[in-house]
Image 1: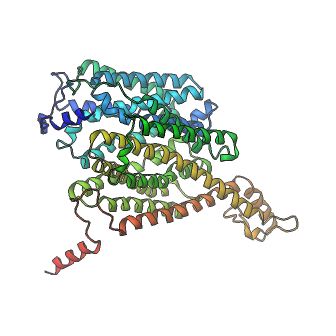
Image 2: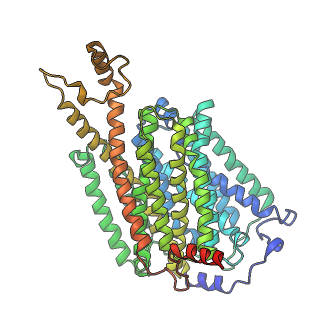
Image 3: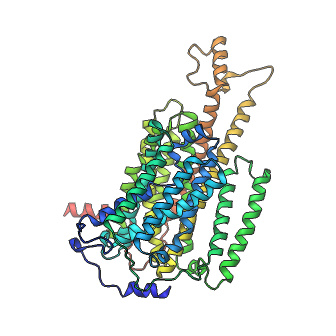
Length: 559
């Protein structure tokens, strides 16, 4: 793999401006149109998947799947995406662009056809896993071919934010599109549309492109540690099973979770032994010795635990308490997209134009999470209009748009060798896309269950056989007559013990969890903003003290 880096270092300087052309495109295709065709192809891959959460209600209504089943299928797809990162450049320099894109499109199309007709969880887990592999391979092939069009100098402070414009647009827009199609048609229709988009990819590759491989001497896949990759995949799926189904099975009180935990430790040990003992492991562990790699992974884990509130707490508010349908709920989530775009623009300003320290930028991202949690804590209620949550959702998107491109850029600056960088992306995305999200889901569902049970017990202590003190119960607007009326109290108590009681307890539990998120994010943002942590690279200018620009501005005004 050393010749890969040598080949890239000896490559001629890229053309600039309108002279940019793509050698895999046929000559009659206009140059201005060439990169946009690959942008559209990348969006087609990103909008694809194995199972679509936007149509969750329709899927549960026509199948026997629980929400945990659909979440596990989602993490199976993410496992395929994460584990394939070390193979991306190997595949690019082994096969042509047509072979990679056409194969990825065919695999995704077949996986979506199987998903429509199969309700077997083992089959769907395998199908979603391979759909994730094809999705990341197709996306990478598209974006790597237009990288020099985005930034001719290969400036990753520009490339990673632009890349995440496509990724985050597909993430938020894909959920809304699946919900819209499920509302007007059926949830299977989203899979039909995906098959259609993959047919479009095949058509454009056949008619507009020709086979091209950037490496004159093709790299061989011989010697790839497939056994190590398989052990890592099994370990990832077992850990995701524990976190997703943990609260449903009462964690280690269930034999299923105990067995999954035992097998997860066994396979984790075998995978670690394989990576240490093999001469050419699937992932080189020495990348963890690179400067700032371990801190970046720790920050990623902490960030995913903070952003786990999006997947769990908001889902409980909109589904269980407010009772929104999927389309309205996904439309509500779309308000995170403008915040993400603002965060990405702020990233480019900070990293590319000002070249300030990256750790303080991460502190601003956690400060955005703090503002989001504080607004949700102050806003959550039974009689609150859903429009009042939009500012908090936008702030959440702003923090997410800052954090993910920044951490990926910091990882690239910390791992100078190209091959190790893609191995670092593998480890980073295991934490970012996979284990961090699964851990957050498992932890927040457990916290909600714990606080909900505790609150119900505390309220239940006010009930005795000899005395009912209604002043201890928060009836709110349930009673329409004077509180002294016994009939009013009985009516309010009856409604209280129904759905309103459960919803009130859920909201109290959700507020308690948001309270802990407020302190958690505030402490992290204070650490990153107040502590002068060394920069990822040495030529970054220090961020001035916050009062300094204002003082300089006032001094200039006086002159």
